[in-house]
Image (spheres, rainbow over the protein chains, first blue to last red):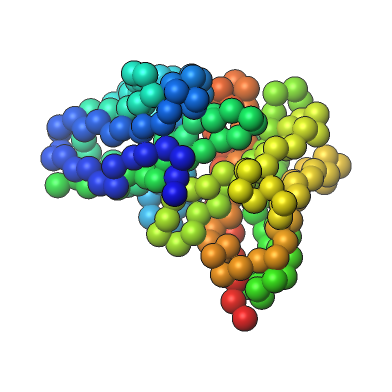
Amino acid sequence: QSALTQPPSASGSPGQSVTLSCTGTSSDVGDYNYVSWYQQHPGKAPKLLIYEVTKRPSGVPDRFSGSKSGSTASLTVSGLQAEDEADYYCSSYVGSSNWAFGGGTKLTVL
Amino acid sequence: QVSLRESGPALVKPTQTLTLTCTFSGLSLTASGVSVSWIRQPPGKALEWLARIDWDDDKDYTTSLKTRLTISKDTSKNQVVLTMTNLDPVDSGTYYCARQGADYGDAFDIWGQGTTVTVSS
């Protein structure tokens, strides 16, 4: 069982926006701004999309944005495109020099 | 350009010890703020963080597997090695190494392509 909770699936039509959630506790997501998001296509390694809750590495489209409220972090994908169909994982520092991932959300572009 | 590549046996028997090597280029594990972590993913399941080694040789392990894991580095070879003892079929999956950098809030910013391990007799 993952330390961080993500809905198993989400979907949206091309051009729409979709928001994926990642729920932790006051001891991890709620206590640290070390939340990151990853995109993983089938058979591929994960790719960093968002770090420190809201920051985007260079090369990541600004269609991807991150936020946090209390113990829940969110990833919003705007202007959905077919290539956005993938699994999305959140990660957070959880204290005691440990890191955790969420269970992942499979995003389907209808 | 930073790159990491995992290597190790594809098939291991239950109760045996697994040794995985992460060979990297374009980064220095002696530079302040740089770390390398191991992360695994069982088939069809979520990512799981396993262990991390820092530039100053500080080591951290996931609590649930701490007694079975050892992480080490060889800076002369640009390698990080992970050993896992007493393997079980549930340890099967893809094992990734990834860089964690202070510049990215310790996010896993560069990943290897992964190496697949099957635990079976």
